[in-house]
Image (tube, rainbow, N blue to C red; front, top):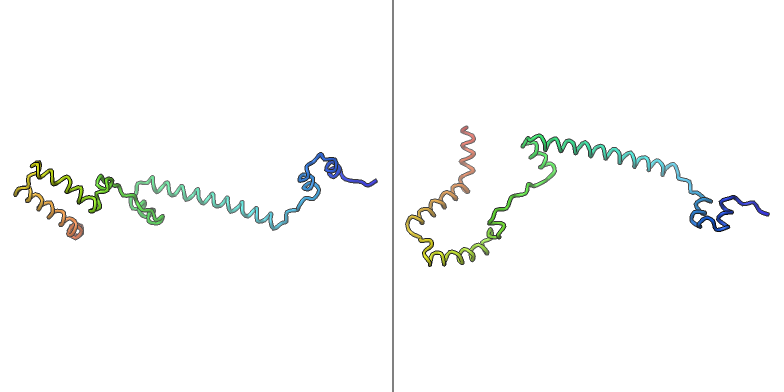
Length: 152
C-alpha cells in the first residue's frame, strides 16, 4: 500500500475541490524579485499619496489666502482659463449678427411705424454720442489708461 498525504487523500476522496487541491499540493513560490517589486510599488504609492496631500494643502492655502496675484500665477501654472460669464445677449444667441440683424429689424420696423420710437434730431444726437463713446473706449481706451497709470 502506498502512502499519500492528508491533502492528497482528501482530494482523492472529493472533499476538496480540484483547484484547492492543486494549490494545496503545489504552491508556487514567489520569487524575491516579485516581492521586491511589490514592496517598491507600495512604497511609491505611499510617497505619491503623501506628495498629493502636500500639493493639495498648498493649493488650498493659496486659494484661501485671497492673494489675487498668487491665484493668477497658480491658474497660469495649471493652465486653467477662468470661465467668462455670459450676458443676456450671449444667452439668447444675439451676439451673432446673422441672428441679431433680423430680430432687430423685426422689432425695429413696427416700433418706428407705430411711432413708439420717433427718430428726430435729439435721438440721432444721442446715437452719435453713444457711437463716439463706444469707439473711443474700444480704440483709444487702452492708451488713455496706460498714460494715466504712468502719470500717476
